[in-house]
Length: 124
Image (cartoon, rainbow, N blue to C red; front, top):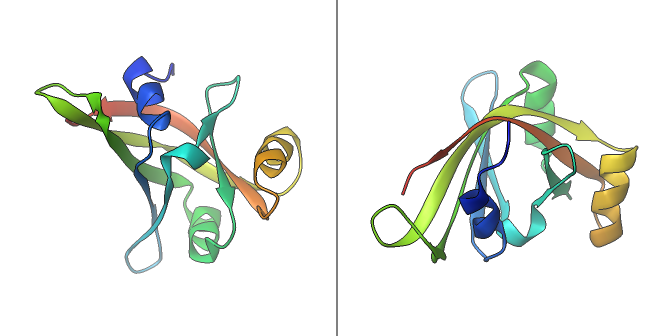
């Protein structure tokens, strides 16, 4: 799927990204920053991973992932500010091209969370 231009614009402005995976008993959420998320040439989202141990464990059981992100600096559907719900699959990579791209920007990253986007819905 092609990442919407408005979502790409959000990533150019700071904001919080919420990442949700499903654990054995309940959902688990972690946060990162818009500026940490980059889109690779294949259209996947690349996120540096420092900890995210529960997220990694959850993805090993169920690779479905949800992200929400937004920015008050980007015009939305009804005025200033917009947000997105991103649905897809995720996996942790500790080697390879995606990991190297993340590690080049964030020396502290122990892994790259690679998100293949299935849907990106503008919510605001």
